[in-house]
Length: 344
Image (tube, rainbow, N blue to C red; front, top):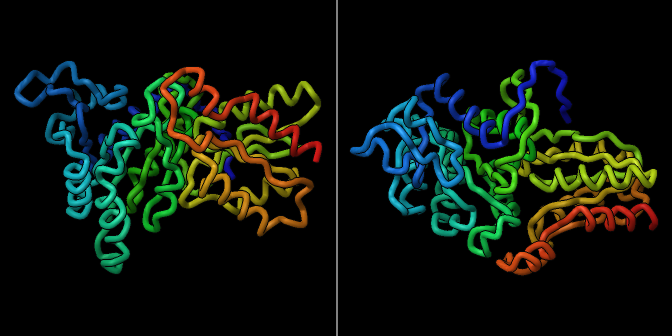
């Protein structure tokens, strides 16, 4: 577990925090490169270096102008091709960051992720390092429909050899992305689309956050709400409503799903003896199911109630706004789950 203590804080958006992490890493290590579709938007490929698009959400905007088109590269629309190139670049000594746009596009390059990136270091006996980061936008709520709204958290977490990172705040986005870029293993970095414009205070020191450690966002003694990514903001809102009823909820952001901080999670649940897990993925074979099983194995005799879970519905994400809202986790559903746990 980790709680910020430094007084050196700067307010920035989630998007700016990601951009700052990449530019910081590129300035400090010439091996760090960025590639992906529309990260330059055609600029620098025969056009002036001004006005780069910076990817679908603008995360890499300005990097082309600072670092040039040798280190910030637009690629063809071929997820399989550019992911294979990223793996090759990492094996060749670079530290590439790939912008894959949406996680829903990952099936187009799943062989490169599953059979190459995740396995080559193991299969080479450690001789080949794979220091690469694959960034993907995830999540619903932006009316982007089923083919642009997947989360896929457990899909990547299930694959040995990958690290899976899901930040919830600008501070986590910056610290975890720097740590991911510095790691010698392939990292899947999942960014919820609803977070890009959110703001928060960012602790600048220490520069990086340790992968595999959860973060405590709110202390509480009655129950623990364990959240994945953007769900942590819903969990915080739910905790405020519960506090008005006299229920003191602890809220944690898991931050990394592989490796997951099982020791820290167990310690948190020991303090409250009640747990609700919140994530945006569908319920079957989910992160929430995995955590529930793990906590039951570790703390069955200490729990005062069955573990609550809040997930999306087991359907593709609807395009209809009312249906999408009903499909996704909500503050009301989290509060309801906490009530069930408290009154069992």
